[in-house]
Image 1 (cartoon, rainbow, N blue to C red):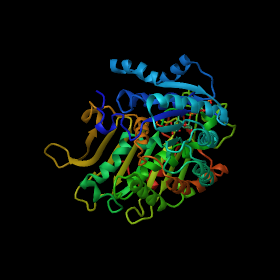
Image 2: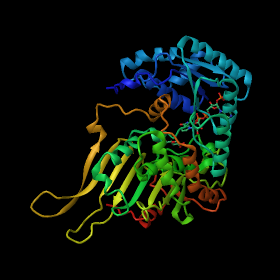
Image 3: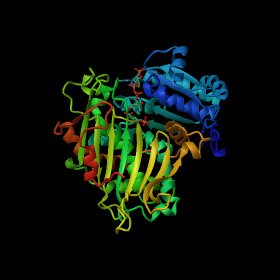
Image 4: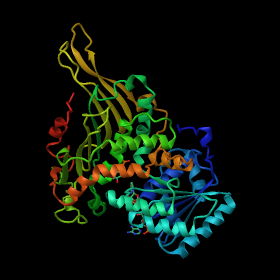
Amino acid sequence: MSTPAPKAAQGDAKHLYTIVVLGASGDLAKKKTFPALFGLFKNQYLNRKTHIIGYARTKMDRATFEGHITKYIKLKTNEDKAALPKFLELCSYQDGQYDRDADFQNLEKRMVEVEKSSGATARLFYMALPPSVFIPVATSLKKNNYKKGVVIRLIVEKPFGMDLESSRQLAKELGALFSEDEIYRIDHYLGKEMVKNLMILRFANVIFGSVWNRHSIDNVQITFKEKIGTEGRGGYFDEFGIIRDVMQNHLLQILTLIAMESPVSLQAEDVRDEKVKVLRFIPPIAKEDVLLGQYTKSADGKEPGYLDDKTVPAGSKTPTYAAATLYIHNERWSGVPFVLKCGKALDQQKTEIRIQFRDIPGNLFSNLARNEIVIRVQPNEAVYVKMMNKEPGLGMKTIISDLDLSYSSRFNDSVIPEAYESLILDSLNEDHSNFVRDDELDAAWKIFTPILKTIDRREIDPVPYAYGSRGPAGVTDFVAKHGYKRS
Ligand code: NDP
Ligand code: BG6
């Protein structure tokens, strides 16, 4: 069953947009952007007159373009099959360089042409591009496709810089061209259903409010695991490493939503003010609070090690696994370790948050395990609470059990939207709450830049771990050192 569109969103964003996907020939455009736009279209969240123009340097005829943008679109129902040709009628492609005015003028001609027929008064530019061309493209857009009186929105993909200095430089250059109001920095984890649920779980349930602090919570674990390695992306990945790729953005966003105070309202600036505030309470990560790993061949020798990838420089010390403990020096969280763990080529694919409570005082019962609230972001979205229960029967034995809200059983007739659908819709509705603000980014980089510089100077040797394993030896000790007790 598909999710019915709420009335206000039936393609009725404040303005009618023309959408331009820059870098339309690329991987993200093919895997995420166009499938998300189709998802919005078929569920009637996109105005039926919205034109979508793909732009990139590659020359592509109509058939190649259609093949590219539909490759990852899943047609599950007859309605989906019927919707696809209608969606494709709205899509067109134009090739051009990223720094040539004449090409952006041609794009302008195409935009004016489609806007004449659609009546669109707003433009959304989606930069599905490598960061090296963000500024040339933004400059070309500003010069050739920015019109007074036309609403402009610019979606920018991560990475937003490499460290505090480069992020500030990027912000300065982008800020000279577009206002903060016009810029939407995507962190796609903010579009994930369970991440969007965090504020509701925390602030719409009285039972959690009073225990959500250092008096009751011992430690928080936020874990991202992927089974695949960096196959095919080794060259890109080596420049960044797992901390920049996943931890500094996706995991830190989750931490922020777990730890921030209640915002005054759900207005974007109120939410983002609280996020920035909590980030500013976190000091830079200490070297002794980090464990790094790099994967080697799988135990059976079938899967290659990170350094076997020809695009990875020989002897690279780039981490493909990282665990780091952050502390929030405020009244609510002082002394509570927030352990972030992420890695590629591991034994499972999952993202989850595990909030572990303190031990029960006294010794009324034996065999007690700690309470935990587990929020599984993916796969198989779920919230469950680990709690002690009496083992049924004549004795008084304790047993650990789950209060389980698994989406597959409770919401099995709902379709969970893709993160990118949710975020593109937010940008069309001009809602910034799930996008990263410039000062938020600054605060995030301040936490990570010193440790990243230490890593970039090759001062930390990553611990090897086999492809497909749980991660580097020492992970169990690392989390135990930071308070985690296995139940
Ligand atoms: P690609 O490498 O596929 O690049 C997108 C397009 O940009 C290419 O088709 C190419 O188009 C053009 N391009 C590539 N390299 C260069 C270059 N050096 N100079 C100029 N143009 C270039 O990137 P992705 O689509 O994978 O990613 C786009 C953005 O999205 C990046 O910022 C990435 O970090 C981010 N991202 C990607 C994800 C993914 O799943 N792929 C996930 C999350 C974020 P042409 O040659 O036709 O002009
Ligand atoms: C991206 C990272 O931002 O997130 C990738 O660059 C990672 O390395 C991906 O695989 C994970 O996203 P998801 O939605 O598949 O969990």
